[in-house]
Length: 271
Image 1: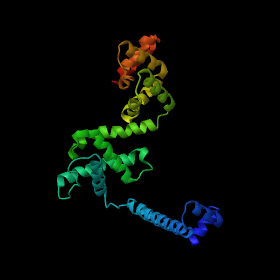
Image 2 (image 1 turned 30 degrees about the vertical axis):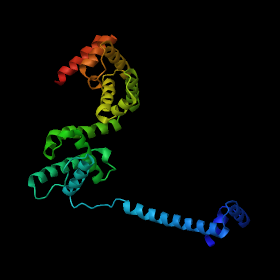
Image 3 (image 1 turned 90 degrees about the horizontal axis):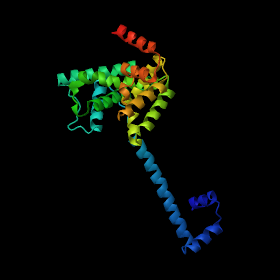
Image 4 (image 1 turned 90 degrees about the vertical axis):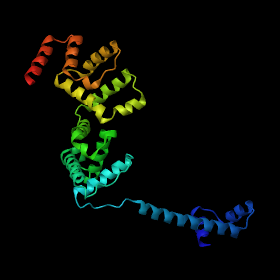
C-alpha cells in the first residue's frame, strides 16, 4: 500500500483519520485503500493515454517539393473547408488546370513576398490565407480559371488589411467609426461585420483624405452625417471621401470659397 501511504502524507491525513473515515463509510480500511489504489492507477494510465493521443493529433509538418504542390494542397484544404462539392487535388495530367494552378501559386507568392503583413508568416500560411480569401471573394462563382477576373479584388483585400494595420491616424479612424455606429444605430452584429477590412478601410481612407485636404475629419463627418439624416439616408462611407463630399462640406460648413476653388483646380490638373 505504498501509494496509499504516499497519498496520506501528501494530503496530510494520519492513519487514524483514514481509519475513522473508513468507519464512517462503513467499509473495510483495506478495501477502501485497494479501491483508491485502483482509481489512482486508472488515472495514471488515462493521463498517459491522453498524452499519447495529443502527440498523435499534432499536425505533421509536410515538406512540399515546389510551389505548385503547396498551392495544390492549400487550395484543396480551402475548398474542403468551404464545403465545395467534388473538391479534389489538381491532377498533373491535366495541363490546362496545372497552368492555372501555377498562376494561383504565382499570385500567392507575390502577396507573400510584397506585403509586410506576411513578413513573419510561413509560405504555407500565406498560401493558405490567399486561398481562403480568394474563395471568399469568388463566392458561388468559384472557378480555378477565373483567377484573372478576381485577381485585383483579391489583392485589394490584402492591401486593405495592410493599410488598416499601418493607419497612422488609427485613433481618429476608430473615433469616427464609433461615432458612425452610434449615430446610425448599428447593431452589435452589424458592427462586428463592419470591422471587416473591406468596409473598415473606407473609414481609414476618409480620415486620410480629410487630413490631406487639411480638414478636421470630425467636422466633415458631422456635416455628411447631418446631410444623410436630413435626406433620411444612411451615410455611405465609401463615398465619404469623394470630391462631391468635400465640396458639400465646404458648402454646408460655410468654409472659405477659396478652399473649394483650390480643390477643384487640383482635381482638374490631375485629370
